Length: 366
Figure: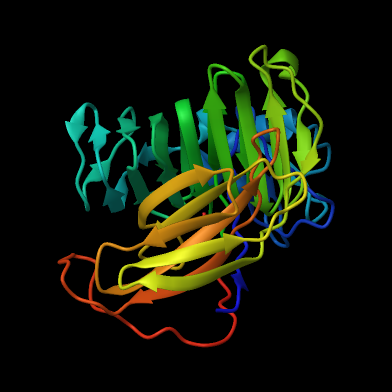
């Protein structure tokens, strides 16, 4: 089989990188302020009416942003609007994929279950959960992780998401604002760091032994380490960064490329997976999923070997993804290949077999 590469992307927000040529739209958060790029025809009065409870709040917004002439605000100006002025309503997320032992507030989770603010999600070994926010942002929590939904709300006037995810241990991956409508706030916190984005694919993790790490696969983001919490470090696509257990940030590091991979069927239900060695890679994460995007994960394992094997639960088409992990525990984008099991004899809820199509598959995976 020919290799097909798929480039993944995930990361989240307490601070958002603002570029000079940013388009007019919601732009995430910086501290306790919502950021917004003003566009043609908008006024402080109209924005106050859209985002806050009172039109008269324009005066406070004017003062905060040091605006002297409200009639000549340049298009693209980044306005800071205090979150405390913004009307919000509670929001919910829905579990769309779940594998293995997943607990919500110490009770077994189930597909289609709703997730609320203050919920605690815990995944066991070989367990995964993916849930979707009301703006179609997706959050995935892999095995051996505990994540608290610290905040889950939306702006009353616009429906923009205001969310904060606190990783107590383990990892979290997210695709924020896939429709590119922007977010009110999208933050991923660990005990020693905060990562913030506007609309990005990213992964973030934490460990009591190593600190925290963030991997940005697509978009722009900012990373804040607790030891220097007033300084944001801007991260670009295919870059990563770590913070040690004291909250001190390391250098920005280029993520490793996806490896070349090949599959060969060795039995009715098993395929050998050959991974071409990637310089500077210390290990490889191998995952099998029901879907090409990698939301519905069946199994995963980390290996130091470049020859391993994969299988599926029964007849059907599955997707194996492999990412290279460096000595800093930062992982790059995935290489992905489909494989089809045509044999019968194992029953599964995964569905019937579908043919593998030829040609490159253009798809992001978490």
